[in-house]
Length: 282
Image 1 (spheres, one colour):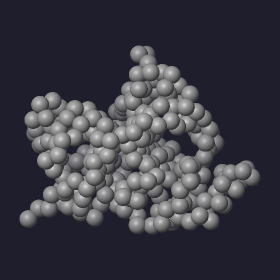
Image 2 (image 1 turned 45 degrees about the horizontal axis):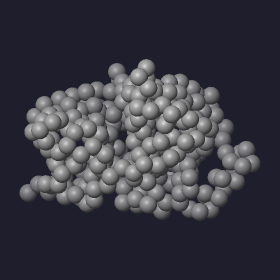
Image 3 (image 1 turned 30 degrees about the horizontal axis):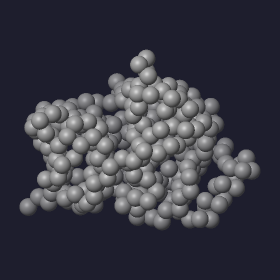
Image 4 (image 1 turned 120 degrees about the vertical axis):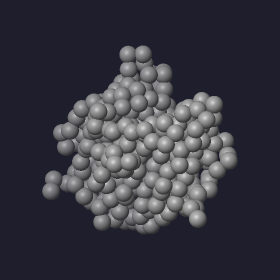
């Protein structure tokens, strides 16, 4: 008998300030991270007020994680200590593997109407990969396949494989799925998931239900174990991000932008940053 995933917790985004004074909503972070393994944090930075985002995220370091930025509206300029630079725009994704260490900046610019909509997810790296070579993968919107499945559900496949449509991010150690799903009014969407994987959705538009509980824009739903999950839209369409990934089940030592496995590794990382030895050239 198929085992439907029940809801474990429902979280609601909370306003916070980050970077040089960016107003955003934190969906989950440091305190909740053990429950979301291998994911560490999710931020929602949708805003129609340029003063709330233009100060951006000036130069800062990362080590031991991957950051995934999904832009729905507007532009984000970025640059790093390795000489990479560019702009990600509406529909684009930037998947950055910080690995052994990178110093970068992210500066939201918005669109012609002053709107800046997007999300940033942090994913952990296993101990064996924490000191891997850093890299950027900028994925333009045209490289992200879109498919229609049961009940006219529309899915943009950033990572994962839906009906043979494989997302451009297919070489990540935590074997993630990252799907942008839109369910038409009154319809349901059922998705198979490896029972051992962490799975959650973050609602970014509309209202609906999961496990007979009401959900709406700004709600995150973390599911218990099971081999599939189901979501139903109300009388309007329901849009959500769906994330799944293989838990690492490793100790986490986390301070600010650096996530390692031990406090000693954290101390070394910050000392190297202070001493100018943070960026590895080999």
